[in-house]
Each structure stands twice: as C-alpha cells, then as structure tokens.
Image 1 (tube, rainbow, N blue to C red):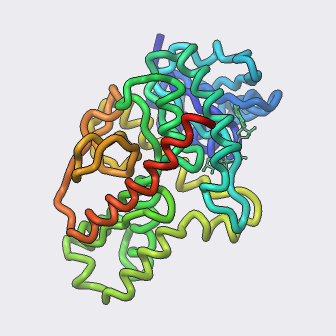
Image 2: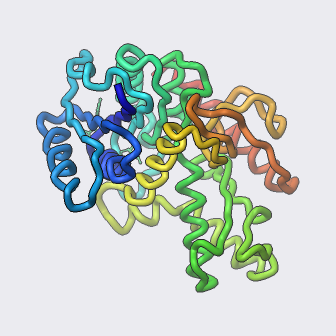
Length: 316
Ligand code: APR
C-alpha cells in the first residue's frame, strides 16, 4: 500500500508541512485535508506540479472533509497523521485563548482519525498544543505512545537560532534544549546548551542567557506581533515534518516532544515537553537526562500548570 501521511488542516501550517513532507520524498503519498471546498485539492495540485522541478516522486492528494466525516476515506491506511486544524492566534492572544474553539475542532478530527486511520501515529500541532494532544489521545483512545505533540523541536530551534545570532556562530555549532509546556511554563534548559562543545554559561553572562530564554518563551508571540494576521509556520512546519519523518523511518532519534510521562523526573499522568525516542510506534521511550534542580523545579511547575487544563479538555 505504500507509506502514507495525512496532514489535517490546509492552512499555512498544514500546507507548508505537506510541502516539506513531499519534498523529503520518504512517503509515497501525502494527503492534505481541510473543510474548505477545493483548497486542499488546489494546494495538492500545485505541490505536485513542483515535482519535476524539485525532483521528488511523493504524490500529494487533497481532500475536503465534512462535519460528519464525509471525505475522510482519503486518510485510510495513513501511517502518520499530523493535526494542524484549528485557529491560529491574533496579536495579543495567548495560545490558551484558543482552547475552547480548537478543542471542538480537534475532537471532531480525532474521532475521524480513530475511525478511518486506526493504526496511525498522531502528531498534534494545533494550539494550545499540550491540551490538544491530551484531547486527541482521549478522543482517539489510541495508546498514549501513539499520540504526541509538537513543541520542543520548534522551541529548541528558536532558542538555537537566537544563540547562534547572538554569538555570530553557525547554527550547527549550537546545541540547545527546551522542555516543559509550549507556553508560559516553557523550560529552556541552559545547562544543556553548548556552542562547539563549550557550555553556554562560559560564553555569555547569566543576564544575557536569561534574555534569550525569555525571547524563546515568547518566540511565537514575537512572530504573531509582526505578522498581524496568523501565526508562525515555516519553523513550526519544519519541526512537525521532521517528527513525521522520524516516525516513518523508525529512526529512534531523540527529540524534545510533548509526550505522556509516567514517573520521569518524578512526574506522572500528564502530557509534557520532554525528550523522547521517536519511531514507528510513536514514542519509543521518554529519555530522562541530568538537569539542574532549578530546571527540574521548572518542569514540575509546567506539569502542574498543564495538568489541570488537560483534565478540563475532557469536557470540551
Ligand atoms: N478539519 C480540517 N480542517 C479544519 C477544521 C476541521 N474540522 N477546522 C478548521 N480547519 C482548517 C481551516 O479551514 C484552515 O484552513 O484549519 C486551517 C487552519 O489554517 P490557518 O488559519 O492558516 O492556521 P495555521 O497557521 O495553519 O495554524 C493552525 O497550528 O500553530 C497552530 O496555533 C496554530 O492552532 C493553529 C494551528
């Protein structure tokens, strides 16, 4: 049947994710869906027409879906489904302001994924992502390792980019990490940041590192404020597409993702940004590493902040 990935939501985030996935040329088919009539089909045709120029064979199929699951046959047999459906922020909004409206959308999408692609690994990116991931797991009833969210790959990329710009070094010299929530309780982890192997704390004063940490935490809002309409999608789609690639290649690569934790760092029963090995079954294993006491305290604070909200989504 071939390798198949579906991207639900053909807005900015979804269409760029579909494009990146097609250009990787590791799937046979990318299905792009939306509730808008014609839009996913038009974007699919447009991406397919770039194949001779970019030199990839993956075929993109666009499908319009209806409120009662019409059109969802197109996702049948998907190995991976990336959920981008939902509203983006406007300037001044927090991700949490999207909770109710996006919960309705993500629940409906997740129920249809369970029905039409019961073996898929689900990657959630709709915001607020920590809550939408928990909701997608509830609504699909998939094993928790098969549902996870995108946050840390993006936040880490933002942190890395800022460090590289500040020190005027290539991005590839920088290793950085962010954990916690994709929001106010994000936990950038300076103790795990190095530049050409040297600890970041040897290269920048503590106040400057704190400034970069704050900028990382507000990374999404900074883009939203500049765009005026809509939110970021180039770096977010790069993150989501990489995660889907890690799944289909069963690479086992360790990525910071929003995963279900059970005892790691003394935290249990919550979806939280942690490092995990990603592969064919979704999350192979949450990886615990040495963090400072302050960083662990930050992670626990993030867990408590998202725990209550994640419980609320059961009723949305
Ligand atoms: N099923 C499929 N698609 C849907 C549904 C649904 N039930 N409801 C809405 N959509 C579609 C919209 O029609 C729109 O095309 O989701 C798309 C969202 O696209 P944009 O408005 O361009 O938003 P985008 O920037 O892609 O962000 C999507 O990702 O980063 C998050 O906060 C962001 O939650 C937002 C999501």
